[in-house]
Image (tube, rainbow over the protein chains, first blue to last red):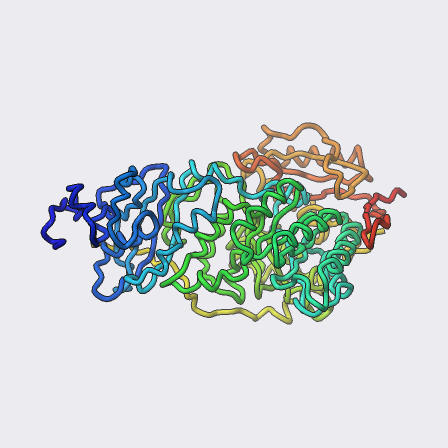
Length: 491
Length: 136
C-alpha cells in the first residue's frame, strides 16, 4: 500500500490527505528525512552514531531517530494537522557510514529551537536521549556531538564562578592548580581526615578533595568532616599565606539535605563545594544557582559517566556531557588525564578540555569535535585531571593541557614515601619547574624528564617521588577514540 | 615565622623554587611580552592572602615591549622598597580573559613573619577563623 502513494524524490509523501490517513508510514515518508535541509543558525544539531538492525535502511533509521527524538509516534495521528507540525519535526539531513565500521552510520539531525524549554538541560535531554535510545529498529545509538545555537546558549547562566574569576578569588595565576583527593576515600574519621587535608595543603597543594562516595557514612558524618576539614584549610592558609580550599561534597539523599550541607560549608567559610554527576540535571542546575548566589565555586565529579560514555557504539560521548555541564553551570569538571589510570585517548580528551575552556570551539575532527560551537561569552569551566597521575608526568600533563587545569595527584601525594607534605612539595616543585622551563622556551615534552631530575637535585621530596613512580605509566589502548576520516556518504 | 616546608610565603608562580635570578626573571617577562601581556610592578608590606590590592609601582606598562625596561622598573622598586614584597603581574586583555595571566614574587623581606590564625568559638562546634598578618 505504501508503495502506491505519491512521493517526492526524497521519499516524503506530499499529498496531505494521503500523508495523514490512518496507518503506519515510514519515518522518511512522514518528513523526518530531508537531504536538502539547510540547518538554521538557531537549530540544535546532533550527530548520532547509529547501528541499524539487520536489513534496516540507514536513511530510514536516521529518520526514525529524528522522529522518535521529536514529534513522531509509531503511527500516523490526525492531530498533527492542528499544529505547524513540519516545524516541530526534527530533520535528519545527512547520513554517512562510520569509517572502518560497516555496521554503523553517522546521522546528522536538526531540531528547531522551539522544541526546547529555555535554560533546561533536563528538557533538552528528555528529547535528545529519551525514547530514541530504546527504539527497537536500532541495535544501538550514541550521541556523538551536539551544536547548541548561541540563541539557546544565552538562556543558560553557565558556571557560577568560571575559571577566570576562580583564579582571581584564589589569587593563583599562570600555572595549573594542584589538588589531591583525600585517601583512603572511605573509613577515615573526621579528625584523621582533616590531618590529610592539612598536610597536603600546607605542603603546597591548592585544593584537597572529598571523593565521590564520601557523603555521610557511619565512620564520618558530614558535619564532622566539614568542621575538621575547614580547620585544616584555615591552618594551611595561615602557614603558607595562600588561599586554600577543599571540595566539600554535598551530595546527599535529597536536594533538601544538599542545601543544608552547602549552607554549613558556606557558614564555615569554604570557598568551594562539590557534587557528583549522579545527582541529576535539575539538582545540578539548582545547586549551581545556589553557588552563584553565595560566591561559591562548584566542583563537579563525573561519577557514573563511564556507564554511558565509554563504549563507542551506545550511549553519549563525554564531549556532549561536558557541553551540557558548561551550560548547566559547573566551575570544575573532571575531564580525564590521558596519561593516568582512567580511560582517555589524548586527542579525544583534549577535545573535552576545549569544550570547557574555549570562547568559540572550532570543528576539529581528530579531537572528536564535529561542529563549530559559539559559547556566546558563557563563562569557562576549569577542567580537572585526576586519576593515576604523578610528578614524573608533569611535563606531559602541562604539554597536553596547558595552564587552565586542576592537576590532582591523590595517590601521587598521599602515597609519597616521606609523607603527605613531602608528596605535596614534590608535586608543587615539579609543576613550578615545568612552568618556568616552558616559559623560558624549553621543549618540555622531550626535555621534561631531564628538567625534573635536575630540579630534584635540590629537592629531596621530588627525588623520592621520581624514584618511587618515575617509571609508572598506564599504556592501554583507549576504547573511545575519534572516527573522523569521513568518507563518501550514502546520501 | 612561616612553618610550611619552604619556610616562606608561597604565593605566585615560583615560590617553591630557589629565587629566580634577574636573567631568569627577564625570560619570564619576555614570555609574557610574547603573549601580548602588559607587565606591572606591585609592592606591599602586608601579603595577607586576601589583600588583593598591593600598591602599584606605576601603571601597567602597556606599551613597553622590552624585558629590560620592565626589569628597570623592578630594580627601581627594589631600591625604594628593599624590605617589601614585590611582585610582577602580567595582564591579558583578551576578550573573555581580561585578567591576570602571570604573577610571581621578585622581592621578599629577609624575615617573613607570616600569619597567625585566630579562632572564635561560635555556636555548636562551629569556629570562625581569622588569618591575621604578624607584624614584627
